Image (cartoon, rainbow, N blue to C red; front, side, top):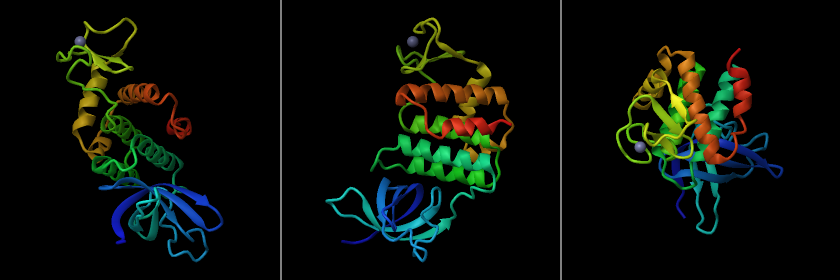
Amino acid sequence: MRPDRSEAIILQSIPSRERDKLVVFLTPEKGKRRGWAYGARGMRSRFGASLEPLAKVDLVFLEKETEEAVRIESASMIRSAFPAQQELVRSLAATYIAESVDTFVQPDDPSELVYRLLDRSIEALLEGRPVEPVVAYVEIWILKLGGVFPSIRHCAICQRPLERPLRCDVRGGLVCAECAEPGMLVVSNAAADLLVALMTTPVDDFAARKHSPDDLFELRALARDLRRYVLGHELKSHDLLQANIRP
Ligand SMILES: [Zn+2]
């Protein structure tokens, strides 16, 4: 049995028994995995603080065909876990981003694009970019990479090219004027422009630009409606972030 080695970002770290941790992590090539880190809770653990949520680490782990969870052999820090005490809103946003990724990525799904989304959005938060555009970026992109966010070019029902304003049916996509039913959400043209910018710009550049709070709010509401429809519930960390994001 040869050990595997991979860069990874920790999504969850769950204390287990007296001395161990069960860790959920995302890798660029092997997707989301679960692994046991034996002895990780001990005072003199060789894992130190490297298995805390959102830490970026170099992991060595052993896989057994008969077991779902791998065994983590070592972990060395590439970028430290999120400094929770430093700034509450940033820390809540990072937790929310980790939960979003954890929710929409299936185990073993190769997920290099999701990995890069997670890595760069955490980096943008650590570098002090404004929180709300980073969060909006992840909210839309995680739905897109998860196959939930609809095409912005073609009607989900008749496939004809979409015209402005965009109309959204949360049950399945953006629809043209002819396929739309009364009461469907109409996306303002400004928010639609922002959506196009978000889809075509790296997170760091997107977050560095100045955006209208109303347009960001509208896009986030669209993502939230689509997400709630698919999941049937809200993410656990959503309300706490929302309660703190706007002073
Ligand atoms: Zn149509």
